[in-house]
Length: 261
Image (cartoon, rainbow, N blue to C red; front, side, top):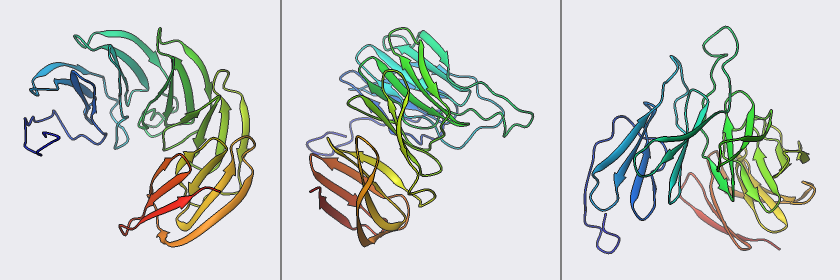
C-alpha cells in the first residue's frame, strides 16, 4: 500500500499460507510460507525475483520462522532444522548450517522446527528451535559459535553483552552473548504463562496471564517488583518498550502505559 494515501500498489498470491511477518528493505519484500518456501519480490512492483524451497519433514509444527533481511543477504530457518543464508540478488545459497538434528523413533520425537523469529545482533544471529536448542551463528560464514539446551516459543533477546531467553517453562535465562555461558536464571515465575520479554538498561519486564507485570534486575535476574492490572488477565499480551515507557495491549483491546521507576 502507498504509505501516504493507502492506495493499493500491487497484490500477489503466495505459494501457501504465510504466518510470519514479511520483511522488507529498499529493494525487496521477503516472504516465508508454511510450505518451506522463501520468496523475494520487487518492492516497487511485486514481481517475483527469486524463490528458495527447503525440504520439509513429513511432520512439522504449524508455524514458520520470521526471516532476517539485510542489504546483501537473507537468513531463514526451516522445519528441517537448518538455517540458510541466501544471496539477495538471485536466491543462491551462500552457506547452510544445521541447528538441530532429528533424533528419536517417532515423528514427534524427530521434530526440529525453527519457528521462532531470528534475531540479528552485529555478526551473530540467534536462533531458537524445537527440542531444546538455542544457538548463536556467525553470519559471515555460518559457523556455529555456541549452543545451549533450552527450549523457547519466542525469539532470543540480545541486549548489551547478554542474550535473554524466556523458556517454555516460563523460566527467564540470561546467557553471555559471546560465549553462551549462563549468567543467571530466574525460576520464580515458572508456569505463570509469561508473554514476551522487554528490556531496558537496568531491568527485564515480563507479564503473566494473571495480569501481573514483573520486574527483574538485568544484572542478576532478581525479582524486585510487580504491577497488577485486571485488563492484562489472559495470554498473548502485546508489549513494546521505549526508553522507560512500557506499552501493554491486552486481548480486550486496552492499551496500558507504565513508567519504569
